[in-house]
Image (cartoon, rainbow, N blue to C red; front, top):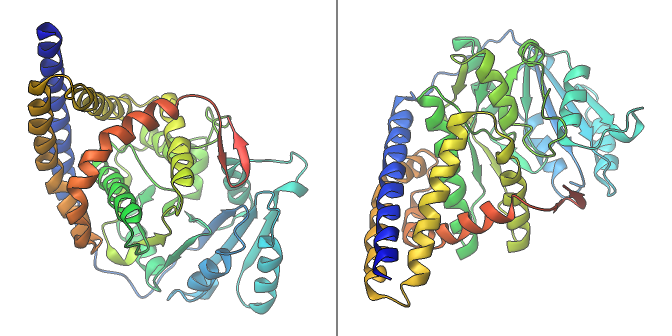
Length: 383
């Protein structure tokens, strides 16, 4: 047992040091990003806002009402709604909303009426872009809302710095429940990695709920070519495609006005399915740094989990777990402090000890579970 105990200690030490260096690197990336607070009042860029949706009858009207209220020239906005085989009242509600707003440029694409009968979010986005006429593509989700300066801020940034792609912030709507708070803090940790990795000039994560890129650049990187058959990853794979061709032209917009808000998952099973969907694509990453980051986090978490479970049989392992658990909290705190301050969610910091305890269990479970089998999302089973 002594040899095994020593092995666990060495594994924890090596994986912990590696994890610490990685998080320190991300902290540097976050601080390199400058806050953008200078939106313009005059614009020349035509924008195509793409909203793929499936069974969103309870959300999509609210999303579009927030877009309609944007402080942005009406003639420069084109909204393209792509119905991905909904079997609820989503499409009917969209048609009625379009009729109520005849001066607004709404376009609706029904995938089930296309000859190829496409059934995926990537396919929906691809069809939407083919139909679009804007110079700048912005994607969001039907369950998202935003403030009136959202579009103005993103387009101002685009016209000021001329990036090929903009990764923009996403945050949850307030949820004070225990599960909602832990989920919120975990989600913001992903947002911090998304932003910080761009700050160190090696982007690895993005979120399609708030994502912008040049229309012509989408075709220059050949869109989703090479990963069309992977159900998830319409955002991350495209990010990696852009990074290959335009490594210095991917920006993160560090602006509170640019945030898109969405709902956290209400049920644990929905949360697991969502994270399984996100995790399932990681084994198909071609980006070495993205794989290194995922493996580093998983290795440190599985080491912690092993020590935690075996601490019931050997007291020294309990102390190992306590030491490295506290060390992980201290390592994670600086970047979580910065990201919660940016999103004005500082109250979530009180949940760090709880997230720190459950996180290794969650990462190992989702990491293994997400690599096998099928998952169900919005009523569709996907391999």
